[in-house]
Image 1 (cartoon, rainbow, N blue to C red):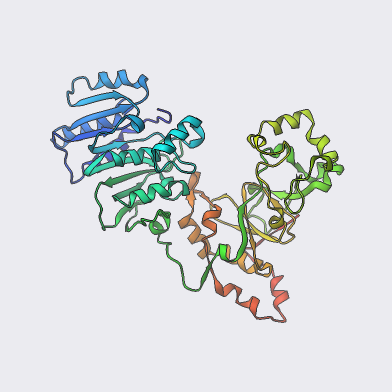
Image 2: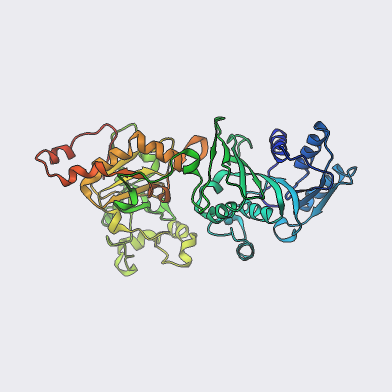
Length: 470
């Protein structure tokens, strides 16, 4: 099976202890390892039964990769209770089991064939959006779980909050998620997955779920059943506040920056730009170029944009010298390798830039950061790249007040509690989270009360504000 990664023995033993906690197996119970590999979890079950003087249940190990079958079969040849099958768990298994334990393969939709995608979308309710194979394993595991049975899986934590796992979270609302145990990101060595061990009982319960955080703290949480992200409840950041807007209510647009699909073609140092191309150029910044070390950040690069200021692709005959530049054989080859040209003009960006919104005064932030931080583009001329998010307020006069609030401890605390994790403790800021950031209505009150000092107040330097100039 694609995505096979061996599970360390200490994690196996911890998971087996969760599987049998206050639920000792009986001889006639049937246990399933749906992606058994060479049998790490089966060995863990044998160890637990020996240490706890318990009878070994019947065990079925399913493995789709035939190269693991001989080793697993030989390893357990002296155990008549254990059967190893070469089969595909997602398509071939329909029996019911009292216990299910395992480490499903982590395979993104981008690594599946079109045939596989079509097959899975027809067979699995959770196969929506940018699904991952482990999500389907969870759905299939729950299908195969006997009433009052228990499932323990180790998976990436993303199913707790990503939009593509919404249907999976709705499905989990029909079961008792007994425990969510967030493990160290170093659990699998250099493979950063933010692993999570989830224990699920096939019963409905009004009892809160136990959540064990990576710092060892634990809390009990009633998880939402409507498919919304589990993170706000887990981190105590849920619920709308009285006297607050959501950021989406006060912005024209909250979006990721421009994706060209070929930055080496369209991005240049401003000083090196051919004078003929300046008519198509705008100052641009990437996430790496936004630094909290400086209040002011100056753009040193330009992006060549074959679009009008309204975001319409300029017809090829009107591009003039830009066509000659882009048809340089070395650059043209890069453009033609992009997947977007199957549906777009050969010189179009990977995504059409909404320039009518982008070319306004706006607030910028990095897509991945150790701590969220925000900057202002007062000129409205800077085009953020795909590693930057931008927010365009409906009221341009609110830029300074809004940016100051976004850089406050209150906003940072909310974002850290609601954003998904990236590597090394960093958080990933995304538009679907930013849109729901609570913003106090009080920070806009001064805009409704004209003052002689209002203009000067808007020009004050603020310690937590960074200005971006083109």
